[in-house]
Image 1 (cartoon, chains in turn orange, blue):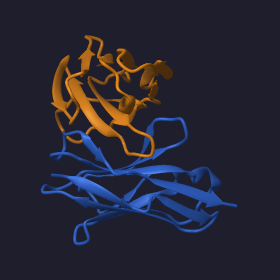
Image 2 (tube, chains in turn purple, green; image 1 turned 90 degrees about the vertical axis):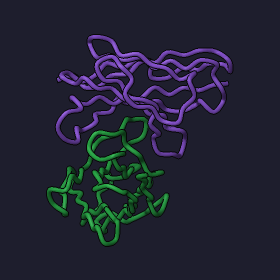
Image 3 (tube, rainbow over the protein chains, first blue to last red; image 1 turned 90 degrees about the horizontal axis):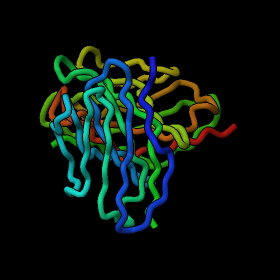
Length: 115
Length: 114
């Protein structure tokens, strides 16, 4: 069983640039969520996708956007990067929303540094 | 609104000693609570979860946690610390009950001394 994989693992961007982070869900999972973990902090919810639709969003501006594809993989896009966007971005997948608290399986993250 | 508070950003214990990591929650609905562990440069791994089936929850690697509604607590314990337990631990509550996103605490870094 393949786990959640994220790419790239590390990247460096400059302020104002755009970035795309990618996530492949664990086999059999159809829900993907993204979290931002700043240094020394707990992860914060960005948004969640189910059946290619965003169905939950945290307190992040519209320059954070995402996609979920028919194979349930996902992208996180961040436009107009700011220094405070430097963080570890974690992707998590889970099974259908129906029926109980599905367990989230996390990838190892993409560490973004904005200079 | 749900939230969790982890008391102590850094806990240090000796190998073989009791591990106690504290978590208090706030929730207007029956909470779903979780403990995750994060090793350096890795993602989050689920240690255990409380979903109202039993108040004492056993997890992986010898960890367990007890849900105490009267104290709004969900503290994580392990009877005997091992060097490999050194990591950061996060308590989380599921927003809105069973299907919402996770709300994490700020984490507690556990150090284990030989």
